[in-house]
Amino acid sequence: MAHSEIQPDCVPRHVAIIMDGNGRWAVSRGLERNAGHREGIESVREIIRACRDHGIEILTLYAFSIENWNRPRGEVSELMRLLEEYLETEIDEVMEHGARVRVIGRVDRLPPSTRRAVERAIARTSENTGMQLVFALSYGGRTEIVDAVRRLCRDAEQGKIDPEGLDEKGFEAYLYAPDLPDPDLLIRTGAEQRVSNFLLWQLAYSELHLSERMWPEFRRPEFEAAILDYQRRERRFGLTSEQIREDEDASEGAGTDGISSRRGQS
Image (cartoon, rainbow, N blue to C red; front, side, top):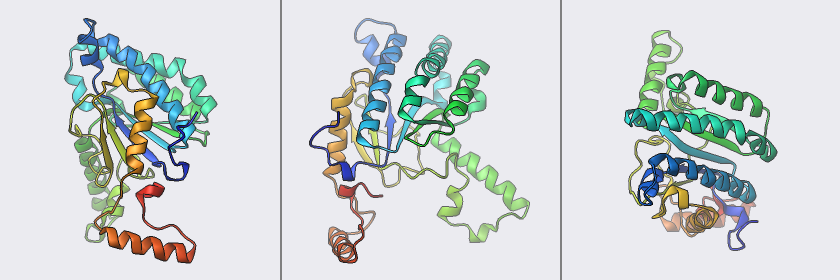
């Protein structure tokens, strides 16, 4: 059930989450780090349900960074196994939500069995028209930009584009998922205060919510608190508050919506 204080007409369209603190949560309880990753799956499940209940269109989860390949081999193997298990066991509920699974990152680096599980989930949900559930796997923000530049350079060499006419919108077409709008809200758990190479291009004007909770502890109440925090903010996109109000007044007179975070607009 949706939180009664949340205004349904101004929820963020796209929420991105850095799911941090699994290992620290486990170690603080005298458990193996992998126990934290397993407990974190329940948080994933609950947050997806909350997004469905609140009508959030896109949820992007930072599931495995490109830097995570440098972690101990056993932990990496367990993370891949848990990902495969999640995609196999949760796919029925994902289908019930009408959600579409997508992946961004250098997926070619995933182990073959993990890559096959990802491909099956993408294929099975490809016709769904509900929420888009995006997993960032083997992902790095700088890597995405470098990959985009490489593709752009190849097209320029082949005469498909004119570099002199390139603008931001043209560059965005070379990112991993250019059809997705930028996140309205970035949530980071685990008490850290950095973006950790996540969606560096897309987060330019995203609102940030930093939670002291470790990811295994971050459930619906904490998520809804983040949405309420977002709804209290004014998103100005470089304008002044006065300009925002003038735009809203003009839009109301014309019968359209202006620029306002309180309506969840980006």
